[in-house]
Image 1 (cartoon, rainbow, N blue to C red):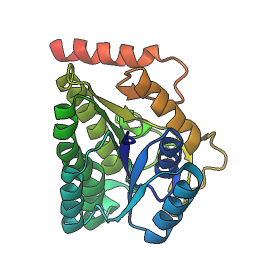
Image 2: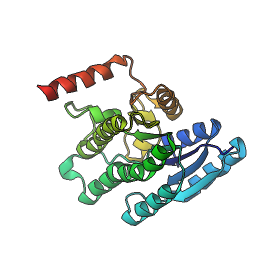
Image 3: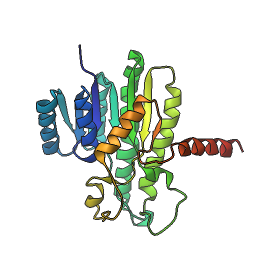
Length: 251
């Protein structure tokens, strides 16, 4: 019997690596995607050796239109049971100081790529009657109305993550009855290289491990939860937020 197959973008570090590790341990074969081939090869070799997983390496920069198109074609031809859209980066800057090229890269990697990859993967899942999509956003997706010097400059970054929340919520409703799930994962500050790359010191901030974040996501997926906020003490706040949004729109 064939193993289920998952594709994980941004798999060369952090949350992406943790997804690959836990999915391989759970019996999945994998397609791992990132820019850094050396890290992907090391990950693939380790998961094959330790878990017996069949791991395909796809080196791709999702900010490149040509490379994204190539990956979309790969995904279209694969029978995937799970797609994890995890690739992303920070680029925390005030909007007027953010280089336009960098802003476009953020939108390509964190909006366009998840959208096109989902569009490529979901028809096959629906046809087979099973599968799942996880879009990795951020707790900052909910930060639009919050001001304060303790918040990062994030207009473009947070907006791309807010897109993933709305996109996934509506997509989940459209997929009802198909056997296919959609989840948006909104991690809090996580102990990865994400902030180190930007030169931001978060040593005094309480952080979850990438392993804990992924464990929470997969557990929430098994329960059919659409929005996963791993560090949320009161899960009822998600229902309250959804209800408030409904009242606001109807009002």
